[in-house]
Length: 287
Image (tube, rainbow, N blue to C red; front, side, top):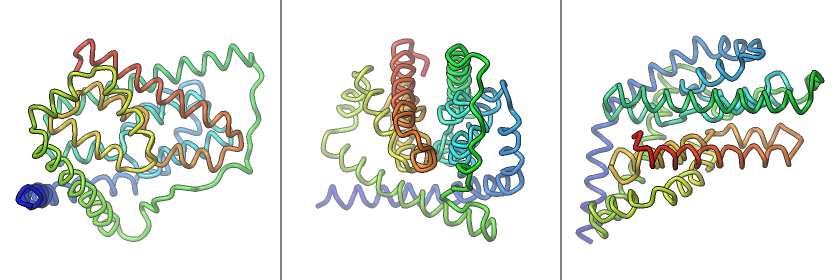
């Protein structure tokens, strides 16, 4: 029981310390999204052959519903498959707000975002090149009936402060739960033993993290980021999970894109790309 209460108390204290930083971070993000969300959507629609570059660059900015919007645009064939994958692979979901609220060194944040964007852009271009060679100059027509506005999180509705508060307390609740469970695990195993167990598996770590990343909500990115910050998960393993994670993007794709087999292949590609990149980074010691 002592371990239980200590784990709960430590999680609560750490969470309360983060609250003001989380709120300020989400307030700034909500303001930026409110001002730029329509512009970014139009940029993506007009991106053409440079879609993977624009998608990869915009994806690293955690705009609520951006991956969902990309799914809708792809279902309507307004953007290419490569552009969609660039957005999915670069999307950081809740990683950036947590890193900022934990006051992680800016160069580490830039490094993580840079790698995610670079991998997304490179994969997007390769997929578009492969699709071009496969289809030739034949281009699939628009599917206007598939386009809708399933953003699923209703960001920007109502006041910016209210949206920021809602996001803050949602993530605060996730952080409390994850920190509590992690504290229990550390108390049971010991932090050195747990860190050694996770870090000594450069192949298994990215494979498991990639599966966690496929969970279609913000919990996956919260878990992966917290484990990384606690030193329990290597940078490569974290990247593997964050690359395969799309927020609600993949969930929306299965809803709006009629080709189920294509959706499944996209999901497996995201997982494979994330795991491959994560394992490579673990062995090269990039993080």
